[in-house]
Image (cartoon, rainbow, N blue to C red; front, side):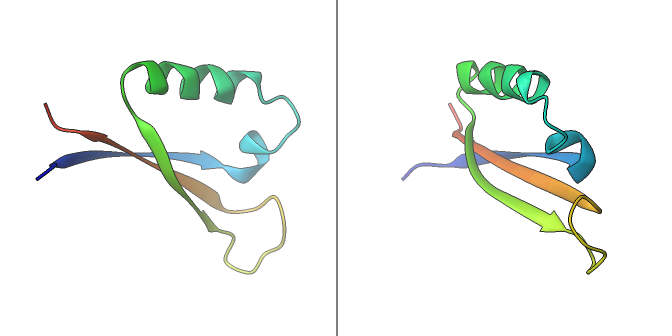
Length: 64
């Protein structure tokens, strides 16, 4: 049976979707090289419209 560990990264929607994706791509490339896999992105806009609130990126990897 595989055991998993999880990592959650929170980011503001404005930063994540502001147009320049290179910084987030660098972070995600780094996490991928460490064995982390993105499994979900959860948005909490609280009904305030696009570009508000936060997004939680959920990653997992097998425990070694």
